[in-house]
Amino acid sequence: MIRRFDERDLDEVMSIWLTANIEAHSFIEADYWRGNFDYVKEAILTAEVFVSEIEGQINGFIGIIDNYIAGIFVKSSERTKGIGSDLLNTVKNEKETLSLKVYTKNENAVSFYRNAGFKIEAKDMDEETSEMEYMMTWKEAF
Image (cartoon, rainbow, N blue to C red; front, side, top):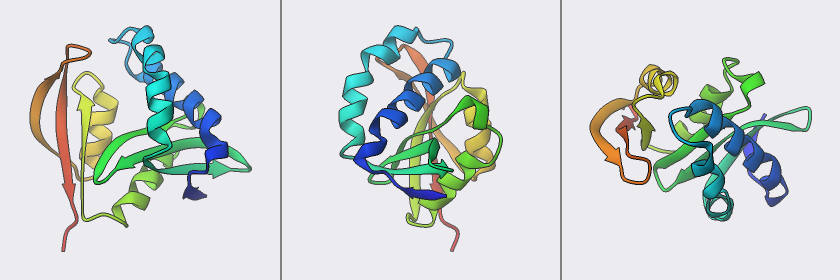
């Protein structure tokens, strides 16, 4: 079930956020993610967030700021089960356009977004990590 985030979800969502980032971004020091934990925890409270929940357990979430996807995060044991797609489709049903940034080295995520209809618009360096990333966009087909 996909539902809107509730503040009581915060600890579980943050645990997924930290673990998923460390797993997906082996090319970035884990301390970078740990160092941003408190900032992201505050940001989640002001973002539009949807969670995927099965039998009372959150297994993934998506965070949106306006039309920008701040991220989709799914527990490693639940990946490739369609949860990321379900979360993304929930947001696509509410927005006409979406954009996001994804590290070029995160090939699984790049492939996921391309398969979901996103197009690469630009390639830039993330100043904080010195890693290259794509800016990708999706527009609803009319």
